[in-house]
Length: 211
Image (cartoon, rainbow, N blue to C red; front, side, top):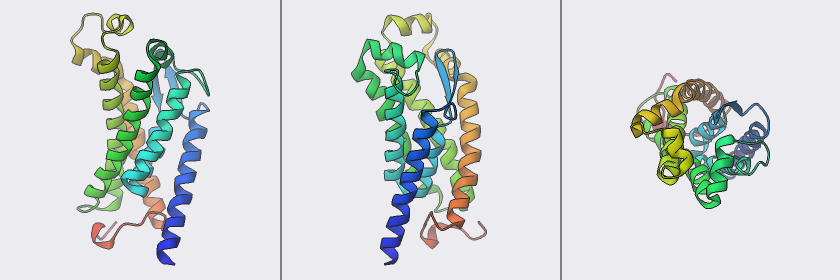
């Protein structure tokens, strides 16, 4: 019965996080659009899923984030200037760029949380998960954009002959810093609250005393 109850709570939490992410994606709650880029807050439910539900939960919610991003590249549920251009170039590459990168970010966030929680307090592990999710999302999104679309006329125009690393740093800029700060804080607070509400269950030997 205890295992069944734990599974039920996990399914409910997964559903809530998925619903929250879809709501954020379809409203101004999830994105702050600035030119061709968007500061996204949608990575927060992904980070929480990674912490609360592990690598699989992080991957699932990350996949939902990716799918909503891909739909917006088609003008469905919002729009992304960069996504619309990438979709015109190649729908398949756009899917890989926007979906698979988010699945991987969510999965690795869960892995990182599980590892870090063995050595530190849950609050610290949760903030690390929030930071990791935003950092990995930016890293995979930007690197896959350069790898998949770097040779296109559009990307060559954006790069403008600059060093690729300098371009990448300038491309994400303040967006990445803001996302990481918000995700780190929000995930730490929310994941700790979920743990106290017994919605996150970690083996006792994985949580240091004094959390």
